[in-house]
Image (cartoon, rainbow, N blue to C red):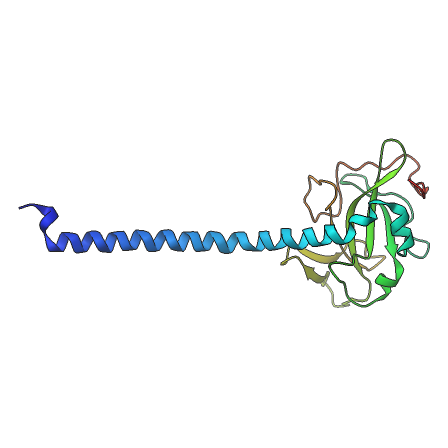
Length: 197
């Protein structure tokens, strides 16, 4: 008896083939679903890049209300003894004083030192000092970019909810890491950088 002519065999082959097609389609759909948030986040980050590209020119940032530090604090190059550094923070006080955060209007621009002593734009920072929650153990704030960036309190003495995105300079610790191990503050970095790079 030729198995190829057996009706039951053909039915089993069709069912097996349908199962394989269904499994492959399911796998493709699952892969697409897992990739789409990343694509969406890249698209969101591209929007932030477009919104902040003009701030590669520090004079433009200053003209738009960004200034070194915030009310006399955070005026030097910010570094961590083990994790690297951030750089110099230029904050827009009006944006900080507004409640909430807006992804396309970061409250802070982070400039890193260049070898010649000038600075260049490397990251952006969102700051929300108003989003306070005094319950013990609560240390997170707004969530951006599909949950990849959750504002958090880095410095309990300051109490700000903050989050960084290294959109202009690679960070080996990750796009949304606070510290960049490749950034080095100059000696005596408490002094502000040049105002006209």
